[in-house]
Length: 461
Image (cartoon, rainbow, N blue to C red; front, side):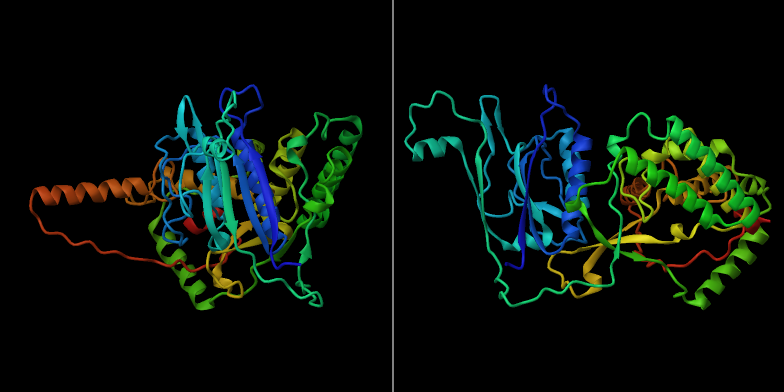
């Protein structure tokens, strides 16, 4: 058995206007999930090949300044909307094009309408790129000439792509591969795109919903146990998923590391932050903070649920955003979120995350710093965070708390405003021949836990 097992994914994305089903966003979303799944299975050599109908000019297919990859030679001067989705897919999955980086570059599609590299690509992971020794594009005209096929009535448009890969040394037959034993088994993610119309919407489901709502109300009112209340919601959705949707097949099983932030913080740093909040913010702000502390309404939860991004990875509870987009689930989420806000507590599951480490190119797999970490949180927890974020952001904007120079994490503002301001200042000073100095400050933010469980506006009183 070789150290690396080949995993080849063959794809086809129909062009725009095709009679075949054409949903590029769904295509790349499904492909991303598949790549993540096989990356988690172990040391695989992953190749993604196919006809993508995506043109992206010379747009970088990696994160510059973080990933270290050779430049890509480009000969195709066209671009389309699918090209943007392709680049986003490559960056998210730590995958890059072999076209233009190895061997000789050439057009992969040659027809009477023109030439392009929009159709056929071969991708591989960053760490496997160096194993690709050579890459070549054989046009159909070259093949017909080589085989002396002069009587061909019609020659296909697409070329043949060849890649030469260097395999690693095989493991001796008597070698036993050892796998980590401290991994927690995570349930398979349900197929959220196959939700039937009767999901949580038949007589049997309505009876279970009524029973679950009563149990949640009892847990919150009598025992004040938010964990048990959330467990009732999870069990309801899980049973409905199993009975009406089902789980993925066995080969989709994944093992991921679960992690939780414990008390591993610099107490001196936290004390300093708490003092800054108590002395500066409290003493300097006299604006009314009632809007921050007002009760969370059903409409707040409903808007946040339907704002949630669909077709995304789930957290430990495996609850997809699609499952919550109905009145019954919104009602149950509302009761749990309202209790969490009023009492300053959250379900224990919301404090747990899934960590998916992806090895950076040319990095030591034994070095934790050589991995790029993707963290997955619970969707209901994200909904609660979205409600708080909307409330806090609106309060900051309405009361003009933030300086005008603050552009990050503000609606309709971003880094481009800073770049425009800097460019304008430099241009004006050049015209007026005024000397200037630019200071570059690189700040590393220190991770800190939530200092207290008080309501949002308590710190502003």
